[in-house]
Length: 220
Image (cartoon, rainbow, N blue to C red; front, side, top):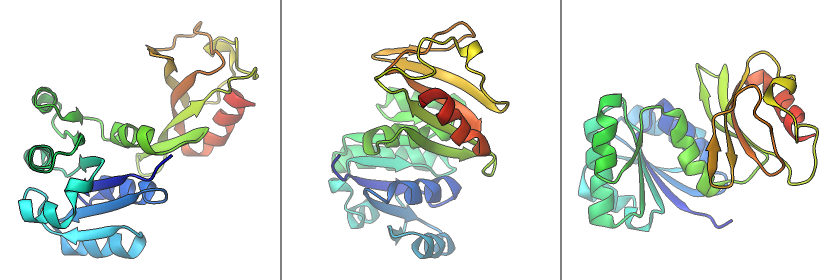
């Protein structure tokens, strides 16, 4: 899978997490107003960090946003995220813009303007990760200070222990909940009698210490 160019507006908890998570296989640039946050990210990661305002044309120009495959605005200010995404899309012709929406009431406005927006910041990682990484289990975002994670598990295309079993019969450990089953173009909200099939992709919420057990149950 080719390396892609990602620009992230916002170097807070979400932005710093995404920058570190995505930088292994991709080129990532972070734009952040706060100098202290810039220094922390630059010290902890290998990404390029620009101290500036992503709502400013010259700052986006410095970040080479015209090269970006994905522009993600993840600050805690919906207005800033909207302006930054609009600037990236209209002035730099970025094909894919993703925004964190802190007030769910604003989500409809973002979507009407053609911006991929979600009020749950955990899904932002998923929106980007599905374009950039491959793996049996992908940690999409850590929640509640590292206690929970949203993970994606690819069920093997060959037969496995979970194939043909109903969710209620999988023996999932406490702290693991299946959120959705993706089967081709279909997204299934699983019930107890929903059956796992070979080739499915399963999205789950799990305690961080149960991820390995979840993977083993679903893929062994």
